[in-house]
Length: 146
Image (cartoon, rainbow, N blue to C red; front, side, top):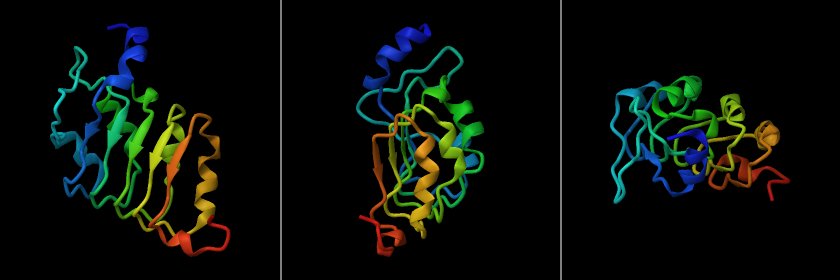
């Protein structure tokens, strides 16, 4: 599958789903099997997923430091990652690694432990970001949240 075909079909691909796996560190994804859904994941000849959605929700992640390296091992085109679900983890800040995914359009961060509203400013460099969830974080109590 060439890159153009890939770009035309990614929306229809199911996510690479590691939700509800009790994952503590991001590197564990490499040895963990993703959840299976009704539709099977398409893979490249090298065995990497062809999706642009990565679901890591409902785990116990508190550090995303090596997300780029892990995404490169799991995804054929990590640079095209468009949706990351990190809801219901133990994140206390917005890791700068998220700003390296320039095609990111959906980012779920609700239900974490992000303290400061100023953390959101880091995401201003993401030109395609259209959907961001932050509810259920301590930052909700800061003046100016809404």
